[in-house]
Image (tube, rainbow, N blue to C red):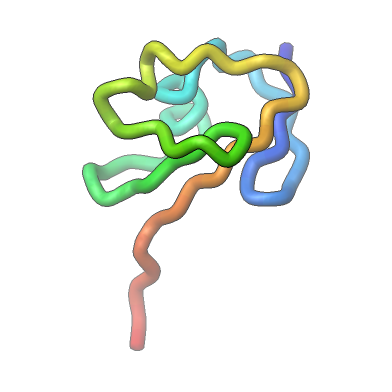
Length: 66
């Protein structure tokens, strides 16, 4: 179990990599933008981006509405 900061909120997760974290938190779609500790992680690299306790994750997704 890891403690991560995701979009400013603490989460305790079992996810070992960024792709698994996105799935566990319900983020889907090709339009997501992600960063780990301030470094952008592109979609093809998310499954190889191993997460460590205390990492700071930013997930940006488009908002619906007007």
